[in-house]
Length: 440
Image (cartoon, rainbow, N blue to C red; front, side):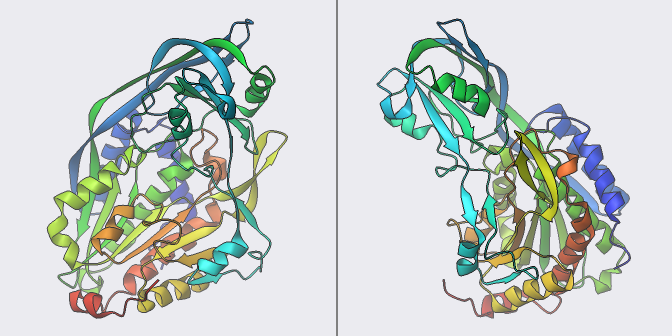
């Protein structure tokens, strides 16, 4: 596949995107990225549309905790929680919090043994044989997005998320990102600051958590190439991110661009189907862009033989002396694949052909009713899908920088996306409806 861009070309795209700064939905860097993407697709010869998406925009300001003792801690406001210019209250551990208190809740990321994931996987590619012993740290605690809810149930007036259980010292944790407005203010404190605070509980003080939430119109970037069938394959990722975010998801954008450039150089009669390349906005606002695309294009979904989502070309990291240190290994790769034997076999063959070690082929509902991807909402629509995603522990943190990109995997992943699309060449709407769907 000589027309797949090189790793250096893809890395240059990632560097260009991340250099613009924080790409939260509605931020200037994200708006710039939309236009830049449209220009790249147009250069490749694709038809391009920018489709508007209305969504909430959350912008944080100052986040402080001032104790009556005079000590002050700087934090990061919890996304989409209520702003507070100054909430004075008793500060207590969540388990001991009374109505009206500011509750302090310690968060530890979940440790996921890959030996367990093997039991729910359709197949896996693990030539090193590491899955029986490898444990992955995923970027969520046991409550996922519902971090504030226990404090709400306790009647707390405010929330402090104490990041004591993370392998590195940070307060820049952009969770929750489901765009649900929580009615109390909250902030994240780093592990080192949290341990200092916990040693002083209970105490009294003032919480400041400034933020502004409004509405903004962002855009999905939609690019098309005609193919050799009346049916469609959609290849997608998202262009927004919680920070400048190299892995989340400038890396996914690079893979979509790579696939688009490859297929633009293939004659129309050799393209298996019409191809639609979708780069959505609003992943950090409950996948607003994906949901808007589905609503706007619902009539075409029955003719989509496959929807491919590409997210997070990530190196596994380790915490060393409070810092994140990249290893030479990829983060565990999840390939959420519809329960169609023909499709599962295609993905499994592709992983081995491209040497994509540390990969699982998983049912779309392996961890939850929908895959944990930006493209999740295609699943309940009945669209066959292959969603590639990794979940490194730094995914929602400002530590997601260029050095976390798994550069060695960029070309194999781009080729894998092309192979999977090419493998649908004989599929059509009838094939899709008649392929035997395995039961859970």
